[in-house]
Image (cartoon, rainbow over all chains, first blue to last red; front, side):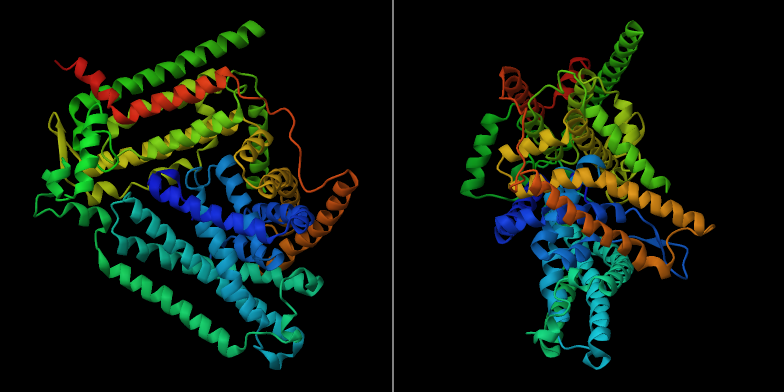
Length: 353
Length: 267
């Protein structure tokens, strides 16, 4: 689910960066300074563990395939939402920097899609209500805790992955990058991540069950129910119903809305001269306001070649033959530079020897 | 397990690359970070059909790789697993966008084809730029630069600690996976019955280790933050690199240089 840089328009990337940065700021503030420094090594070790744990293949019984661990819910259940979020951010940053898993520019979006939902939504909407509820009370204290653990991990992973996948679709569509219609894209992403979420939830719950058997004090909220939990079964069900309604409703709303995405709706369709409109002078697609005119005037003055320089002008002129020829020449220069570099490097090593 | 040992080697190799002594390695980390971000920003801001305008930006990574004395092939070799994923993004475009933009001889070039190529190049360029940053800048310098940008100390310290711990954890998991695989021949991954205990065991041991680690850090005078030495003041060449790159990117973004170049030969 890591998004690459090319999938995002700069404006969307910046927005997601801002959203994630605010969450980081709030988390840092909540974890008071002393507490944070005492928790630091634990957070570092836990995130390193999740990082390494993500590389383990788990065989899924009955199928030939294998699953992986998802970090968000595990870290949240061990460290709490704020510390868990920061740990996830760090994991994502290292993945982006050293393993090119998701890009530098897309880091903000990735933090939001994976860390925010996994940690905050997962904790406040799923983990805490379920762990503090009186569910499964008939199974005895230990049994109830175990059952709640499994339920919370599976539900949490499934829901947070669905939200994350949906965000990926939203962000990509808002960036106007892919030609894939919104509905089709969402229709591919959501079911795939339903299956992934289920498996990840089961792996997470298996690990947590083991930890609960050995060191229950490591898990957040696990014995909270015995101290008189605040959320009853009814509250939990209400929360879940709301979540399902929001997610489901949102999905169906968007899926039927705009078959060909933002791009199509902005530029009209084939019948109304789509191909002509690709030349895309600002006038011809009917945006005219005072502000737009002023902006247009400034644009005319500042841009050296007014048709190329701006984000919204998906100019077909960039693909003229002379453009193509120039591109080929640039590519040739690039190859030459590489060859020259290789040549000098060889000379240098030869001189050293 | 193969994958884990590979990851371990790759981390080590990146560390080695970042220890180089080229002029690029010597630049101020903040300048490199800012230029990289600005470069990626410029790359992704190109319109989806502006393939020729985008092409000029290939020169930035290619030239800097040469100055930094890192073969471009290293980057592609390291990113071989990610590159197909990045390129797969645009694969559907040719099927969905069949408007013909131009003919080369008699071969029609569709909009989808052009936008796919643009998207792939954007992905590859961004990857090359971030790889360049990481291959020429050690992680502690990046953290120091982030600190200068007022990223909370908790986050940078955590990044540094986690990075150091990842090597250790991967080694542990590699040893565990190896011994598990030897005891369970012909089995592809971790069996269902061991899902919990496999990572759970490691988790418990690691938590204890974290406690010990914290105690020993406290004993050595840790007060919640690291102090960075050796982050130099920005010098003239850092400013030159930063402002020069900025201007060049802006110029490349606002004029279609390859097309100008091509038109010289088209009269």
